Amino acid sequence: MPRSFIKILLITLIFTSCNISENKRNRYFVRANEYLENRDYTNAVKFYGEAVRVDPDFASGWNNKGIAHFELGQYSEAIGSYNNAILADPERIEETK
Image (cartoon, rainbow, N blue to C red; front, side, top):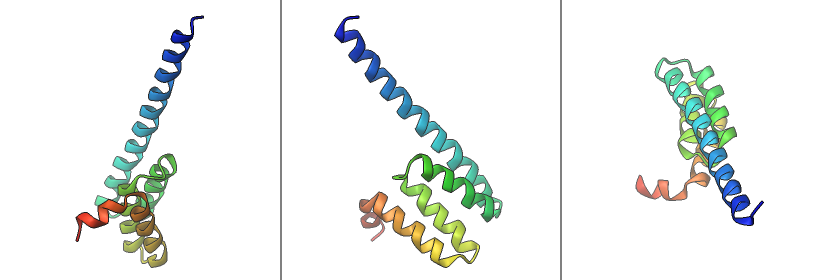
């Protein structure tokens, strides 16, 4: 096989796998948001956890996981999630000042 074909194939596989992970993350996030909206905080924590497992740099997932933990009275876990959100996207904290 020509080298250019192999390079194109590898690049395509990389982008496809990235999109699959992002779609999976987003599906977990949407489902978690539904649980949060319905005040089912335990399941919200579970699905936000899945979203950030797929994408550990997903600041919105960490932030919302913190909200769900807070609503459950799990304050230490909430702080941990908020800290992870800041680590995942330090510029986001600047936007809220």
